[in-house]
Image (tube, rainbow, N blue to C red; front, top):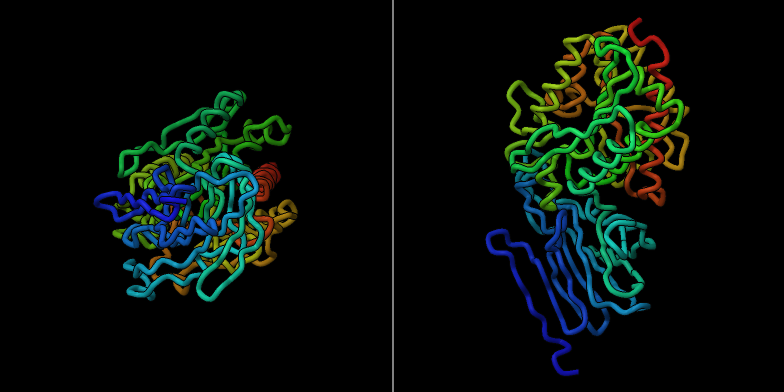
Length: 418
């Protein structure tokens, strides 16, 4: 067929990201929110596309990838080949000057969608040397493919606006404008006539590292249950003031960068008296208010861990930084979570600690900063949700978020102040 093998390449000036690769048959696109892929090769004869993550290492680990493929007919098989980024890390890490290990960008199962909204997993990819091959059968039209199910700033805005309209007493708020000028949506939940000073404060946030998309889906699951009609959720809203931030690293999530160990700062190492990021400064302001009012009871920061972690788990603060009441409350909350988070993403029995031995900047991590500023009864934790399993789907993530909300309700039903 004349022209079948002609390839046209369009490059976005100034950023080095491949925006569109086209043949007479199929086209590959990365010109939408959250997209990131450098197309290395496109073979229309075999419907094969070879990519690597296109993230700027100065904006965090280049492990996230997301693209759309147009022009496939129903029944066509597409083979997506993914190799690790060849960019060298520049952030504050022992791996500075090296390329990121391929395991971070090659999940066992990738995410695929026919409409860019509803996501499922591919069949397990097949490793071929340093490359992972994913085979996907088209249903006609377009295919969206990504490292994991995307959750964009637009999705965050839709979520909080939808739940605010649906739930009495809920309010969609703008936590702040990011350093890049983007709105950071958040949801505030409370109901009933209880005075503010008698309400315990709960804070849930996700996505301090932009590539960890599963954490936003966990936040969505928690928000949907907490704003829902379950009697336990209604009771929790009457007892507490709950704030949920689905995405903290708004800018890198929008631009398809990794976020972790970015320059000049990692969001989760930015919790100082003078934070670089507007989202961190805004969160600190609200959390200080709750602490000063002796109301800050529970803080949970949502993340995704390494590719070999197959169960969700909590990171705790070093025990010697907690009060006796704080340790007792932490143990009780973890015990409740082990009972509630029973699957399909089942919580690991033993939590981990992130202190000085974990990172020299441990005091600048969110949960450690919160614990240092919270009242003695406050609990601050990080929940790491496994992303590299068959249950690491939008449904699996949302179910874990629902179970987190249920654990919170059970926890605050007791007296956390003594």
